[in-house]
Image (cartoon, rainbow, N blue to C red; front, side, top):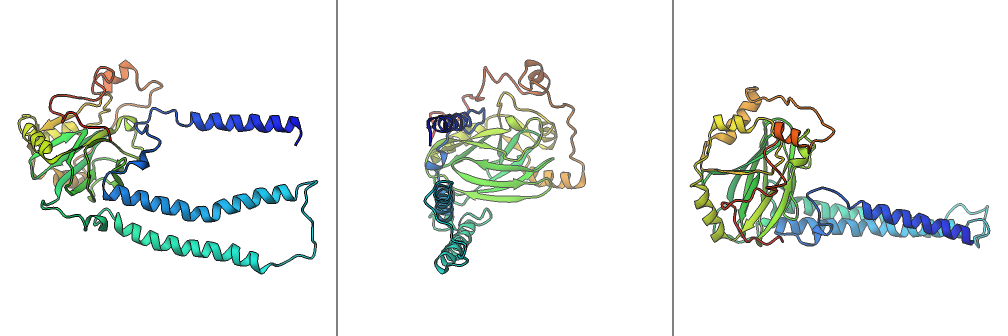
Length: 341
């Protein structure tokens, strides 16, 4: 390789390196590139395990194949040391490797896929069956609107919008639905995504083992407010969770059917605002599903995409508050001093 070719190759590598670095520049709520190194709970840990297994098994085929392709190009280039043999048409060792290794990889992938699907199955994850717990699972009902979240604790008769608080060491059992379009419930480092479909109920189960603040969001594009449709999940020790529930019961806010129909109107949560509710309709989740199915709960969105959806005018007309002055919606009602991981 002469100097000119070497210089062009070096520039190409530099350009690719710059693109890789810039690929991490984003306003996404997911800013930790190594999030998979800190799973919290059996579900997240099992998911990472099977992800690593899949990558390693596929690397058995991908890495050698890539190396051999590069080696072949180099060896049989013009002026290379490779010799052309016009009589060559078959090689048993090559056939065994080309067909045998992928076959073994497929067998191994099938085995781990079967066990992985059972271990982290949303409706009945087997990894949680071995967890000893004296308490019954904490029931939470999740309703996604355009473009907010409502988390209902039916046994505690409280609810919280755009924030989720769960205790450590206790199984969580969720029922999920959506008001208008399909959304995905997903909490990074904690639990895998699952669809939330209008007029239908899906389920999710998980458990967190240590306190922390985690990022939750919808992974299903759902319209103009999608970029702001995220929330924090706070996992707190059981005693702090009990204190938070007692404070929540004193909020005085209502979430009966009338209040929910107002809450479900299309709203872009630009200020990341959240609220507590102490007077919650016991049948609200089921009522939402029935109303979506019979068409009595239906909304239209008056706004269109804007060139500057972060402008002050847009926030004033369609948003929930000043995101700059109150980025986290923090008040005295939110559990404090929770670590970030």
